[in-house]
Length: 172
Image (cartoon, rainbow, N blue to C red; front, side, top):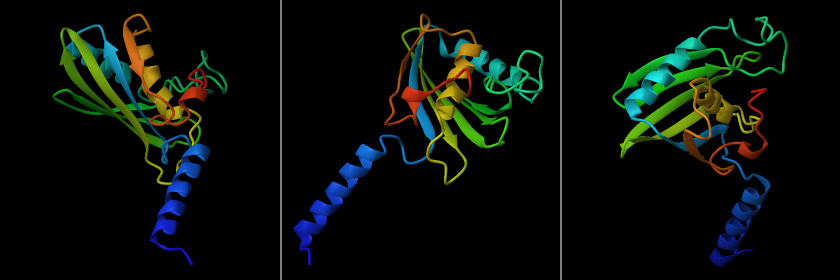
């Protein structure tokens, strides 16, 4: 019924429609790049300390006096996994459903500053949308470590960071 050209045209049309319908990665994840106005070694120490400060569930919503109920953020249940040179690995577990996301921070020195390629990726093979959770996994840590828009710049978008434009890190 369709020749090679017709099949190719249908394939291109299908990809175009799917991108228009689903402007996010096909798996719940977030990739972003930060430029931090300090050496990578300082950034690495602060991030590892922040991950360790938020280990366990004592700060989770519903378990502490500062956050007695949802929605209240997910600044808990981080777990430091490893550091290898300029790469930090950690995980974050969501407080309610206990889904696990893998976090990676790759640091590159650049003229006294640090360029950070950060990634958060859901372990659930079927996870597609995440309400910005994977973005917040990363952003909450950098905010908790004391970085603000004045000390870092950030690059990401919906195409590489699931639901980035509709995130709410006060909740996730």
